[in-house]
Length: 307
Length: 294
Image (cartoon, rainbow over all chains, first blue to last red; front, side, top):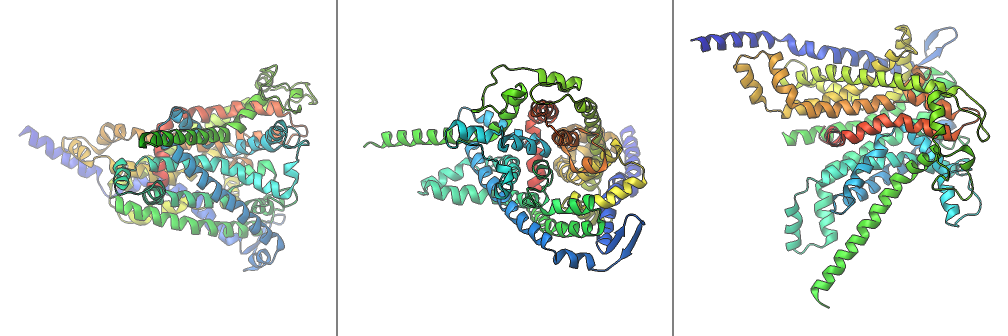
């Protein structure tokens, strides 16, 4: 009797708490702030990109596609695109391959494996700005570690001013980014490798599959979803990197490391041409959104198969 | 040749390859970090000698002392500067920002994730997809309107501008990971608690929250790292109040004291590095779940 009574009140209470507005109350802070800080600037950026913004007279005039026309016909923009594509190519290829290499190493059972796994976290734990500085020390023309190493090994007899050379500057800013992304990629791939059931390999061995076949048809096949995600992350970073490049070169020497993000910063905060800055933002946004949409679709699909 | 000697040779070859690869890993990760560390323990004149000293000949903690007291003195070719006196306040600011972001993020994100996980309501699917979509927007491209909004709110050059933006930009990822977590937590236990007379907040506090601790830690650690490291917003929205943009301003000094800079860098990366090592397990799990499973 008492128990039935208690059950009844609990049911009432539950009803009270499950009232329809509860989820909305729980969601309100997140949704409102996301709308204010992310969605409303997004709409504003789109509007700005069709405007001429006169900061001095505080006047915004609608000018249609003029900003985009100016952007797409400017030599500077296409140069930034070309530079960015080269940069992204390094940031995609190097970390994905090296990450896979290190991940495959760290599933092996050997003395030092746990040291390796811990050390792998280190680059990922460092701020991008610090990574830019670290690589500054590596490539510096007077006391750089790389110059020092080559000199100690007798491979050069004069220090090379790497960052004064346009090609080297692009390669090394990309390598700095690749350095951290390698860790990130390896961490994800290692986690995926650890879920491969050992009997798959045994069965393949019994069936006479060689090492290469096993790697391709078991290892790669099993981690393919993760590999795809890693690739997408690296592509997005290839187009959104700013910090590390800004610390190392600020876009120089000349315009050698002028990524699209650097161009965005120049338009917005050096020339104070906010309309053009917004146009560059949207181009950059469309590129990464495109990649991101593939990403959301893939994860959403994998989620559906999980549950 | 017998089969066993061939397999011994194979095992040995595998060993050699493994350790060669391990050495590559140590070198790739360790070399840049090691070089910065030895620089921070060198007197300025020792940096740049040819061939370089791979081990400081007279290791000194003078750079650290100078950075901490905020006055770098006249050693080597560098003049005296008090620029580094901004270092300790910036580290305090960074700590305040990061801790606030972690707490706010767990609270707001946790609430939202719980709502998505446990309630079926109108627009839930649309709202969730909307949240996910914001994750792929480049924060970089929203800076101009954001700057204008924050200026209207009179938050420019305050720590609140950073706390506000960091928290919100991390929210989608938090909601994503925590929702997954709440989804996998046995609903039956919660239902049982509810049937036994617990209210929903009680059930949350006593059943769901304790089980979700690993997820909460993972998310907390990730938002701490993000908040500690963020550079672009800190550069554009404040006048180097926090550690990353201040480090950049040291680097832009007319005469960079690279040894003091190395010491300052080392001090400033200790918090995220320690946090990452201590919570390694949670972090890797959160990272792979957040990135892969969604």
